[in-house]
Length: 96
Image (tube, rainbow, N blue to C red; front, top):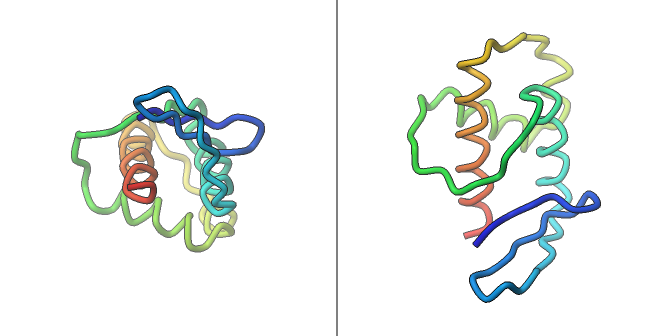
């Protein structure tokens, strides 16, 4: 299974090559918010573990989209990578 964002829609491509639109508006909002923090996003199945704080931040941005407007923290490159890992894990957990 692979995932992609196409025309502001989350698209799931299953093992048979079927494209399924996954219409969770909250996920798209999360994607755009994370993109503003991280920059380029590659959606992939993530097996690497990260510290719980990164998963907490992603969950907070998902449940409270305005959270990033209140939190003007600038993340360095290593924390951005950890946020990307946590974001990818969150997306795959939501879909499965």
